[in-house]
Length: 295
View 1: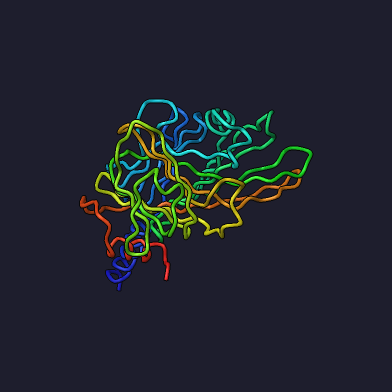
View 2 (view 1 turned 90 degrees about the horizontal axis):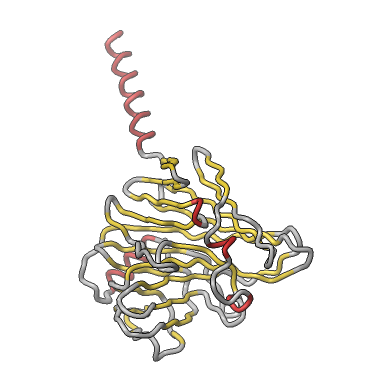
């Protein structure tokens, strides 16, 4: 009887350890960098550098651009439409330090209010162990004394060496980036030209990229054509000149905010190994649809 009790206790303890080992891990790495991890996925966020996502890895393989040039690395977040602030990105959103609240299940990073534009950005990072994804929720807070309209905008930079695709029948302008239409998706095999190029598309709530032997899939709210900010779009792709980097961009609905109100925008990040054969295929579309539970 005593031996049976000991065995049951061991099973209980080992089962508990096994369950805890699969739980998401959040770690302060020092120098204002934080890591959130689940399974083989890890994401590093730089709180001191605009709360940019600096790294997203499957095991030791990296998917995000690590170029040292300004505006060429990491994943960031801006307000839309761009015509309201033009260029460069607003420093309070993109480069200045964010405060950090760390719990056992999440990281919440809050930026400074822009004195010029009166918005504040907040970012929440969570790991979904069951779905094997990192979930990023962005908030735009209207701290002005007037009602204003704004849309959320995530920008992720990846190396210009791979294949990207999404479900959108039309890409505009049609002649800037050589997209093809196959298997009910638009595909772009990366190329290099000595010019900067950008397209807009009305997608179906997801965007995928294959590079470095990895498949990156991002899932976000699907918009109809009337919902993006003026002159913007649900999906955008920017190709920087030469063999440098590409921006995978998604935007949420253009929303009216009263003073003190906020909007939220959630993007689910998936990453897994993929074949290095960079060609459109029905299997890739099926994998994406299965991954994000699309019919």
